[in-house]
Image (cartoon, rainbow, N blue to C red; front, side, top):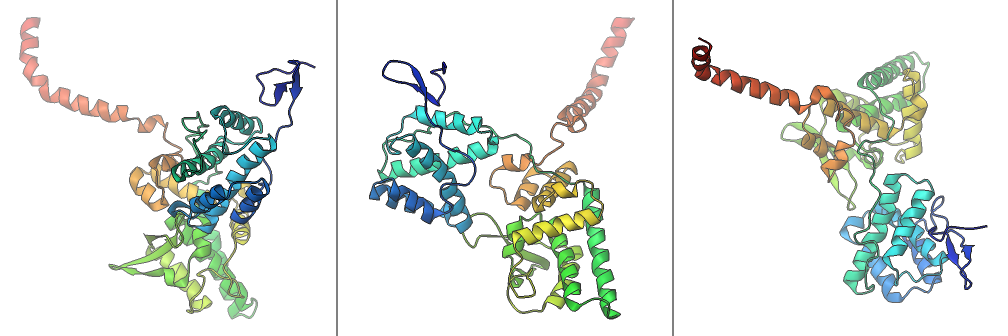
Length: 379
């Protein structure tokens, strides 16, 4: 069987006949799940101690000070290292062509453009640090042509009407459960749980926070600032980083109702009966349950991020300035915020209309200057 010599999974033998080379796995379970397993992977491959020390420095830098961020970078880098080691290559002596072949392998594996871009960005960041530390001679990913993620978010969104229905159902459920408790037909824990679900939903839609913000918020995160009820939401970035956002009376009332049932002792804002913070799977299930019972058509395809996505899309469609939405979402790059703008190509928002109006007004203002001249020529 003839195999194209241009394929990255084939190579000629000594007689010039193309033979198949096993292709390392680039999808599925990461070869290393965290920084500790990454270090074991590197030690097992005989990595130079200087590179190990430099990698530890790279992972502990300001950008990667969050444990979750370190796990993500470790997992992404482990795919590259496993790929290179399986091909019998030295990670510290890699030609740029190998980076290009890795990118092709990621694409051939059917990974999304955003995943491919993230994997390559992690590996390139690692090499940049190693070069600066004097542990590597070059970054093979430098100036590489990289995958370009879609300019639109692929998250399954919600219409504002869907969110309205979810909020209305959650509020009615909290009221109904409270009334049933007064009649002895519902346990106090059910009253607390329904109030918690409604308060959580209210907070998410007025702050567009990530699910991590819900999990990591504490009672002390709530407070006041110059007359505004605020919450210091934990956000992506260095450990302990927060974003102060206003909590309007609508959401504040829902939170106060829940806190009265929760109790005023310090701890996770949204917690279980045992005092532990709600985890991501529990929040995921609750959001889908509310959506299903509220009659949202595609309830089984939404996630907590769908709410964040929907809020951003709604604000942008209402004409709220991009930088204002960017600040609310906590995005460092406005291009990330633009991905939520489902109406960015809509003709009804075309700047051509504003230009047409401006030029029509300008033309009308100067029309008298030339009207007499035109009438004279006509005569």
